[in-house]
Length: 119
Image (cartoon, rainbow, N blue to C red; front, side, top):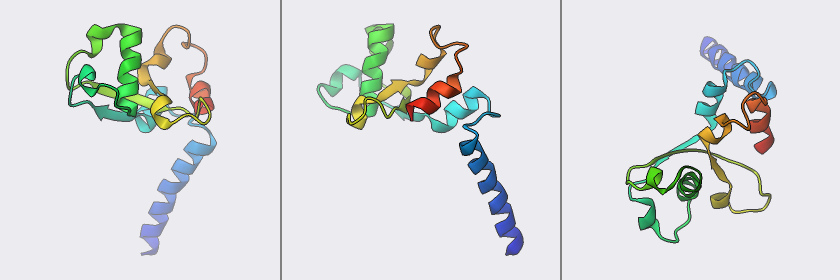
């Protein structure tokens, strides 16, 4: 039993180190995979009407950015982060799509620092 607890402690120490170091030694993509929400939309975006959800908000932002053609089909896979900004806003208004951070304005600007600043 003591050996089992020792192994569990090693794993816990690793994740505590990741948090305290703000994932400094982890590749960006690995960090993004760990903290991004992943959801699939069963219907077309237009079929959701005025409903609110993090997936719907993400899909609408993708449509604004990439065009309606990119989100017209059902089964859209959304990967997004939930930001703490704007402060006090409902969670359905705070997601942004994962690949947004790989766009030109952010490249080379320390993506991890940007990510940690959003949470």
